[in-house]
Image (cartoon, rainbow, N blue to C red; front, side):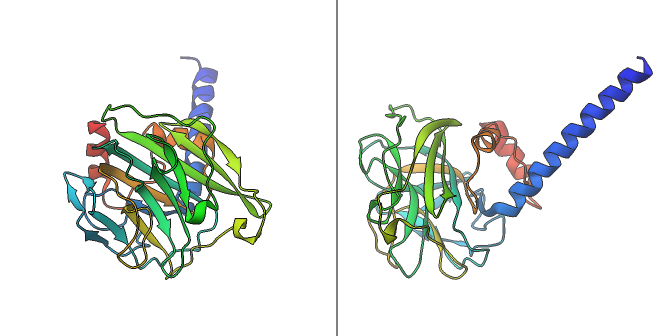
Length: 260
């Protein structure tokens, strides 16, 4: 191989390494919640252990059923205003149960964003929120069939001039989006600060231990970012190319990737 070919190859590899390294830094900075469900802990260290309200961990998945759910409290990470909710979920029942595959809820107020099953339209995933303040139907929503498929779902909330632009993704494909512009102070951005946030699986939202909605599902992994991921970032994650690995659980993640 000629010298200039070797140099060209080296330059390309260097550029790719720098690009991937930069991406990893961005993701690591903004990943504020990450649950692999091999145990009760959050990989980022920002949340307390998962508390089970009938739900359980089984075989590296969180299992929730009607009346059985789970949540994580004691958040001590950075404020969350822009956000992305990310989860891998397989439904065990396609009944209209109005529950959530991942919710970010405020502890002392009715303020939540969630990946909700079939609350507004049968067999469709949607962006749930308190009093539908941040909710509209996705333009390209998918009506699910009884496949038992492990779905990769993402909903992002981006700050557009003090209002949210909400975008949904299913298996890396955009479901379309909308800008929350119905008017009024209730449409403004919201913040979930340290000490006043909880992640919920199964229930749509809660007040203490009571709240509406159920989900019958196996949840493989969930994440919360305090930034609105781009479509390219969503697709990169969907391919299984994780830019951030847990400090001491590379083997666990590798085993899960092989099962997918």
